[in-house]
Length: 265
Image (cartoon, rainbow, N blue to C red; front, side):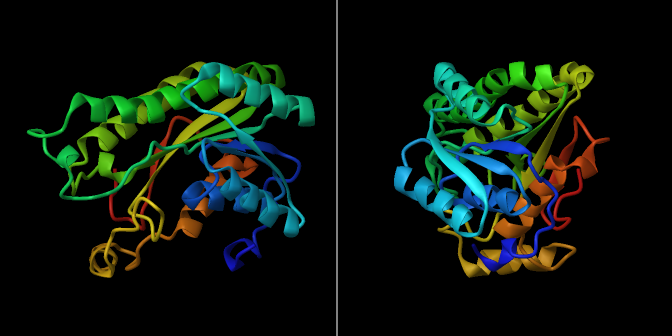
C-alpha cells in the first residue's frame, strides 16, 4: 500500500463500506484508505476485474479486509445483489461511496464542451452513469441502513458545478444533479440516522480522467488556489474518510468543495 495510507488513523474500525468504481483512480485510493482506516471494503467494478483484484490484493497485503464485486450501477438488480452479498458476508453496510463514473476524458476541445455541438446522448450517458447509478445504489443499501438506524452515504461530484472553467456540459450537468439528490436524501433519511453528503473535487492530480492534463495546467491551478497546490487523489480520499467516520455525525445534506479553496460555494 502506498505511503499515503501508511499513517491513517483507525477512524473506520469494523465499519463495512461499498465503494463504487473502485478498481482504479480515485475509487481505488478511497478503497485503500478506508481499509487502512479499519473498514471492510467492497471494491465495486464494472469491467476492470484484474485492476479490482489488484486493489483487493494491495489491501490484504497491508493487513486490511476487502473483496471485489462486479456490478453495473445502472442496473438496480445487480447492485441489489451486491448489497445482499455484503450483508450476507458481514451482516451490515455502514458506508456507501458513490464514485462510479462513465468513461470520460477532460478534453477542452471535445464536442461536449459547446452547447452548439454537444448531443443529448452525451447527457444521457452521464445522467445514467452518475445519477441513475447513485439512485440505484442508495435504493440497494437503504433497507439495511434503515434496519441499522445508521449509515453514511457520500456522493462524489466536481467543483465544476460551482465554477465551470471548462464547459463540460454533460458531465457537469449530471454532477450538479447529485447536489439536489444529496439534499433530498439527507432530508428524508435523517430520521433513520443516515447522513448524506457530497464532496466536490477539483482537477485531481492525477486520475485517468485527468491524464491528458498538462503540468502547465496543474501549475496554473496551484497558483490560483489559496493553498498553492493542486489537490491530490490521496488528499481527496482523506476527505472521504472524514465524512465516512463518526467525526462527521452532525453533518448531513452538505455539498463541500475539496479543492484547496479554489472554489468557495
